[in-house]
Length: 492
Image (cartoon, rainbow, N blue to C red; front, side, top):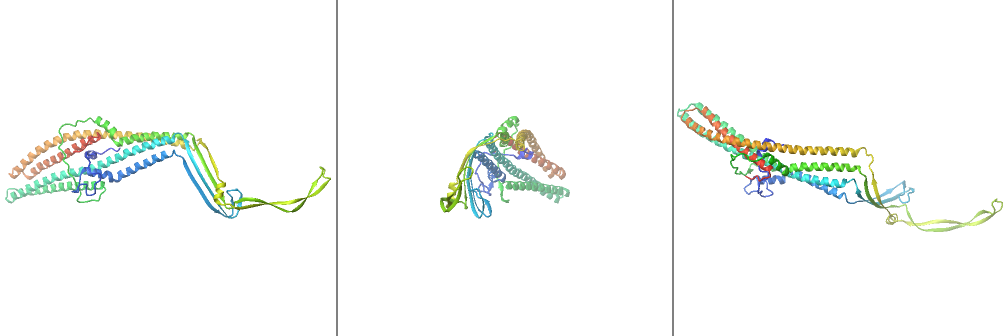
């Protein structure tokens, strides 16, 4: 799990805002007014963001791998056949004689095998794929969390920029009002021209601050629309929630307790643990290749050749008589010539059809196969070494994720305390600087101070307001981050 930056931590609000509305929002927003709420934006991104959808596909791929590993325990049955036309010399597949003529031949077969033992590789492979599927499920949830963080970051950047725009607009109006009064006094001869020029310069600065906040709002709005995968639209608006003012009470939360809860609830941590268990099982799969393999097999086949003829009968033909000398004693001194019939046998056959040959030439087989690995170019040993390294890498990934989580929670806790202190100090500063600013307005109108001194006091007041807003948002967001890691409801 990647360590989140301070900005993400600052703006990571409401990953699981309670009471989500509709499941699918249209590009114009789920509401009839076309305004996107945070809940609608998060739900829409979870269903339509490309990274989340890709994570869902990875999960489906792991599910297919699991189903295939389970199916590997079933028998394997395959059939094959061929039909060919031969010219010239070839071996007759039926008689196995060498033939020199045109002929048609065919072979058909069906074979089946059933694994009985393979070093427990099949069992361990099913277990590993099951763990991979569980890890993919957690990674899918983690991808939803990641996109939610990005959505909330862009959403609340819009809110922050809107708040800055409101303050800058107020400051611009105050400066403009003061400039109008100063111009009247200048025309009446009560003030010098430099007082008008100083306020005009300040008004230009206020205008620049307003435009800067507006640009930041537009950039954040564009980022949000891109995360939602919708076309840019100038009419795109977000709902403005009511964010309460921060409490002055210190943050009552133990960082170690938050870490313990996060270890049990965060999908990203759960995914790394499952990947580690999967790597450990993968080592057992690799070691299983050292064992012999035992399987059953069976098959049947037949063949056909157009050169084969079916024997019907054998004809006996007498072609006259032929003489043959017969010796009457052992010395051969006495002999006698006898006449015997010259008998010739002739083969009588007929056309031998393909299906008839397939039936007559049918053969079957069944048996047990045993394979004992002896030496296979050290492939098994290398695979075992690779599995060990993968296990170590998975362990490191799990340790890194937990370490980053601990550091993130510690940083969020410290930042929340610091933001709480800054907010309390900034609120006092705003109260004091506002009184000074109001007093400076009266003194400027009475000619007691010049515009340079007035602008210094006004800028101090503006800076205090900006610090107050930033501390308010940062404090609230840090607390929400800690609530997120504890699995709490993050609604406002």
